[in-house]
Length: 163
Image 1 (cartoon, rainbow, N blue to C red):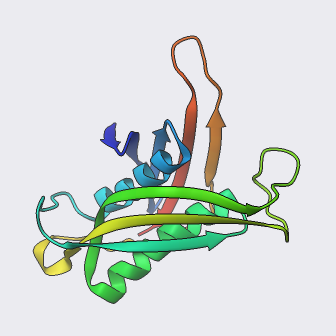
Image 2: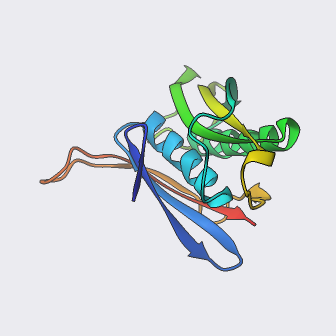
Image 3: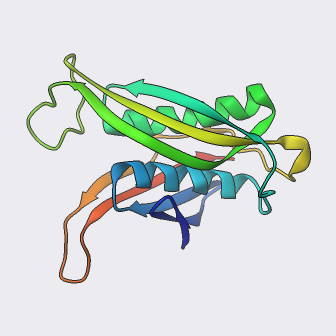
């Protein structure tokens, strides 16, 4: 597993696609780890110093939709800026409104999830990048992991990308 902003990710083969399994101590860490997994799926070697940081703001009706929209925004930014987003930092994930009873996964008209993040855009002409076409909801998981005897718990995510 590779480490990222307090989280970890692992690339996994998936039929004609690629999947990222990620863990993190916080929701922000697991989002950043999945995003770093997306970057790793896109390019084997990423220059350390190339590219400028830029901010991202995303909002959605649920945590899962927020993860989907965040990853979709990264793919969009790659295409528009001709730069591979890497070195992801998720500064804040918040809710606006009340979370419905339960675990907060189902969105409702009164809840909005927001994310503030930044990433470094490495120009595509400086990397040998593979095209990741889209993030999918297929098999997507985003779950809180309860603390066990050997760990403090945290978050797990599993996301499949169309290549």
